[in-house]
Image 1 (tube, helix red, strand yellow):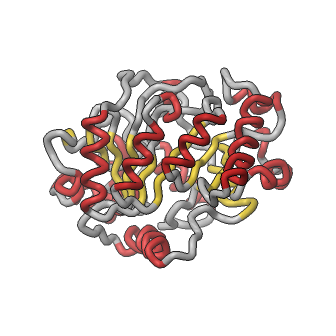
Image 2: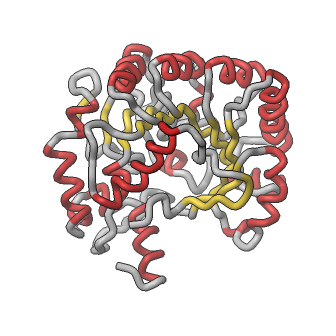
Image 3: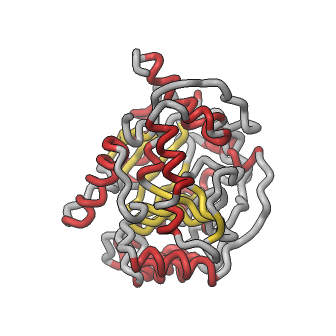
Length: 325
């Protein structure tokens, strides 16, 4: 399998290329564990959902089309996750799953707690609508390592047709303020990644996209577009492709449920709740090992959530076009 095959850097320098030895160890394991089907004693990375609601209605996003139980993570849950991560020398944590993390008023507090716990790489994805200057300063003070900002295109008409509810000029100003304040206070972080889903209007215009955003960010990238509209049915696809996420990461929802990846949006594969079972036990469980074995042996289609997964469908389709499995 090719790790992170749906992600493409087109401008600047990758924000996950750093010189310190521990970070290089993290990225080496991120690549090697899925390739060798090795899982260590604890995930390399956790996705922690601060909240399950969003302030936009993007037509390509699963959060727009699917109804999740709305909620915001409570302090007892996020502290329990971050404490366990710290004890197990967790490399990386992203405060994102299905919602917009900047809607949670305690996000800077969570970032600081994560850094104080010793987590190496702390970041989140955002639409940047709520990325005001006071928020920027609070996040810098908290020690945020990087931030990934989702922004479709470089033209008002394209952007606002996809980021429904956002204003082009306002969000560009927010992003520009992030770099300005970072330089003003003399902080090297957070590193800034601008990324887009490769919507049809941008296909073939990647260089223009990169040229617009490179002065405003450290990295410019795009992700392959996946078919998530209304949770389409991808059932019946049999292939040898194994999802790398099962050897890299786990997800914890705002109400504490532990999931094996960031695509089990309906929580069908959950292991239990963080209040009842440690993340480490879920990672080493027979249930998780069964998921890995099915992927490793070409039987992932037997897992209902994986059989309907847009990432799996997308990666298998790309492989079939180039003669892969």
